[in-house]
Amino acid sequence: MSSIVLFGPPGAGKGTQAERIEKSTGLPQISTGDMLRAAIAKGTDVGLEAKSYMDAGMLVPDDVIVALIKARLMEDDARNGVMFDGFPRTVVQAEALEKIAEISHVISIIVPDERIVERICGRFTCSGCGSVYHDTFKPTKVEGKCDHCGSEDFGRRSDDNEATVINRLSAYHSQTSPLADWYRQRGVLREVDGDREINQITTDILQTLEK
Ligand code: AMP
Image (cartoon, rainbow, N blue to C red; front, side, top):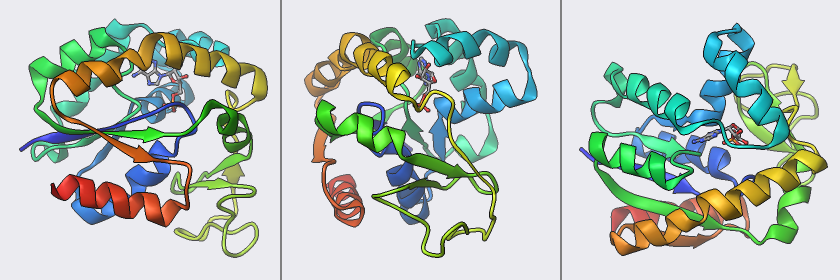
């Protein structure tokens, strides 16, 4: 069975859409960013190595990322296809992925640069279940309480600040955005306008996946 990639700049809404698409399609979300943050929280060697890159808004080296993905794809729930979120981010990673998984759709979520900073700087995450919210664009329904698990404990990512976002955007443009053409040439790239209401984007993505 084939897998899909959610592609786009930081703050495009990949994580938010991944949560929803996972519910509709059953494809498990594999977020390299979440895996790295979990490694940092656990204090593993991978976490220690990754942290300085992430704090600086730079990409973590390809060999670290590819090793994480290879291990993750060995797990049982990955057998019937997965949804990659935030991976691949370089051509080297895409070439490695091509050897280990079949990719049927690369959904490119398009958001202009000038919208990215405000989108990222208002983000917060439920510490209980990982659901992502935004102060303005996606607040919790009841203030201070997660819509999904009811937890009242939230956190903000240390790299979600303006200075780091500028570096993350620049890494995206120089190292990641060339992948759009790489996938276009392979006939699997589908573009979706990500600067709209969250439900509309989900509907678009689900329709695109059916084609
Ligand atoms: P994300 O949660 O996807 O925004 O990723 C947060 C940070 O983790 C990025 O700014 C990178 O430093 C690192 N990271 C996540 N995924 C990758 C990847 N596929 N390749 C390199 N670095 C990554």
